[in-house]
Length: 180
Image 1 (cartoon, helix red, strand yellow):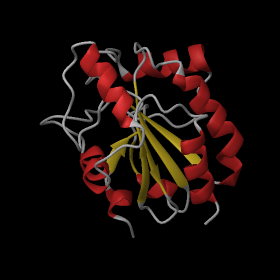
Image 2 (tube, helix red, strand yellow):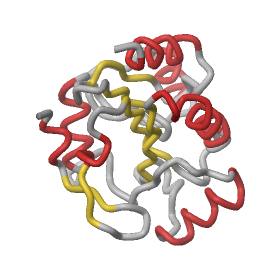
Image 3 (cartoon, helix red, strand yellow):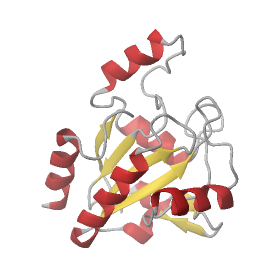
Image 4 (cartoon, rainbow, N blue to C red):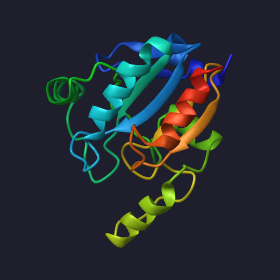
């Protein structure tokens, strides 16, 4: 069994869980935020979830307030925002930290396993151009970074924050993971 499946997480409703509940599925793990310029990606992620869920894709949203405090709300506020603004139906989890000394064990495992994100060069340049410090590899760069986990629980893809849900690189990787 993949070690990722045993890492404790909490649902957005505060219920303890592990990713074992999704064993045998293809997972797209995304750190999300409600007040980010990339927040409209919720719409694309929900469309991706709806179109691929029957084939075994789960989009898992992990709210994080690590980047310019762009996810300040409580779990209840985040859940309401996602439901009312983007009609999100994919699973959401309790707010966590994805970088730093308090990094959640899930993100420590994900970043350690796959240190580089596809498409991250332009995103790094954009942050640097705005005078925003860039996290060193393997750290998550910003909200909406995506990790793809295959049916066996192996991290098989990592995508920069600005790689949207309809990006051919992401779609191709999802299709390959779903085909196995």
